[in-house]
Amino acid sequence: MLLNKLIQGGTLSTTEAAQLLHDITNQELNEAQIVCAITCMMQRDITTEELRGFRQSILEQAIVPELDATNAIDVCGTGGDSKNTFNISTLSAIVIAAAGYKVIKHGNYGVSSFCGSSTIIEGLGYHFSNQSEDLQTQMEEEGICFLHAPLFHPCLSRVGKIRKDLGVRTFFNFLGPLVNPVQPAYQLTGVYNLKIARMYKEILMNERAAFSIVHSLDGYDEVSLTDAFKLITKSKDELIYPDQIEQNYVAEEALFGGADMESAKALFMDILSGRGTEIQAQVVITNAAYGIQCFNPQKPFNVCFEEAQEALQTGKALKKITNLIKLSNRSLAVKKMKL
Picture 1 (cartoon, rainbow, N blue to C red):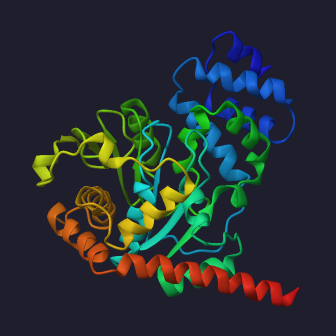
Picture 2 (cartoon, helix red, strand yellow; picture 1 turned 90 degrees about the vertical axis):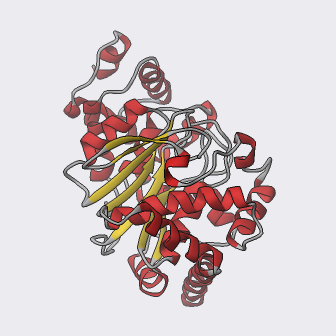
């Protein structure tokens, strides 16, 4: 039994990991056994083979909408860094779209934090859908859509409550950025440690047109500008200090995401509206710039930064999310009329 192997300290092959995830999601294991499996995995570092297997099983069971992802990017972090920052990756995704690039963002409610990407977007009035027609319309009209993970990965519904009750980082945090059901050709991903960054590179190397994996050395799963950060792409692995990209170092408290949902939403909209602090805008634009650079790795960072800056400072990003929310509400209203 695979559970016995984990209890005895063994690691799983890719095939075994896929089988374990299948057993978890298809009621082959009871809740106590699932908690035991998760706990065993938390006692050591996950292996690349295990990560591949878990990912394989989730993607095989996913609902896949009909979306053209050949020229789109996903912007998603692992979460689990316990930093309670504002929603940097979600804001960056909106800025990238406002700069004219296609974005298909995968996300979920917060598990190890109170406000994940889905939490904030839904709180602002966006209605999630897994219907291809709705998502295609959003992509055609605004160039961005949000894929709320539970709507595309119903197989994971069994572990949702368990993860929430545990309230700590588990191997499921590692999977989020890897299981976008449409697998966009480009990806900007933040990770909270370098071991996971190396594993991501190994997995994504032959699966993406381009990717950027970022990790701040003080533990943030994004370019926080609070410290030097690692940037890992197909062709390079470099340590970058903020002043090397003409950015100022920032204090951790400047990235605080709010004490509750209402303050988090207000902060999110303040940044999009140009009412946020200079530091908040600087961090969002920097992360968005690295996303933009994925589409053309040879484009200088400062040019990408200027594109992102223009998209945020001219109000294009605010207009983008406002229009997208209206579109999602329109789709919902049409559905209700047909009932």
